[in-house]
Image 1 (cartoon, each protein chain N blue to C red):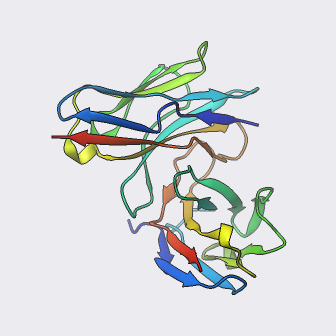
Image 2 (cartoon, chains in turn yellow, brown; image 1 turned 90 degrees about the vertical axis):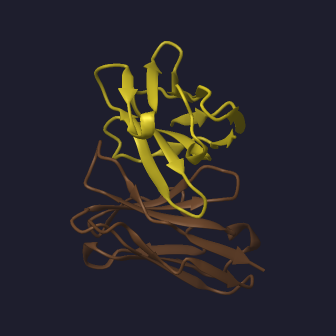
Length: 114
Length: 113
């Protein structure tokens, strides 16, 4: 079984500042990794995914994440945030060859202040 | 392309009543998922379908929850009878297969009084 820990439940940051949202996972098998964003009263939208290859993954809206196998982490970063980035962010994992069943972390609320 | 459609968007019922949610996935998506998202938590997978067959329902409380996917397209999730702890957003997602991203609907927010 897999588990995901998002270390920060809330991250306040000023507009145009950089941000990092932390994600650690636990699994006894190889995994795929994902970051999703959820705006209020909406479903989840995929930001980026790591399946294989380069450990630095670039996604939509200027976000990127780096897979670190030794530290079992997949932290999400953005060099300069906007007010519109205010949302809930979820890290998720799925075991390779397990039918794409996702296990989500508890979420991190990013609050961008003017 | 049209996204995943869910209805209703909101539902309020009393405990012990029954309720049903409907999901229409993106056309051509063989895989369909139902998730439960309790306030302040990440989504939890309830059931996964591949076409009209169940792939995994290990986290579905089968004494009160049921789901079906007729003809491998639309799906319904039912709760009977509802308990207070079932208050949550129920999300439907669809995908084309393993390693492919899941596309989520906007969810149904269920409140149990």
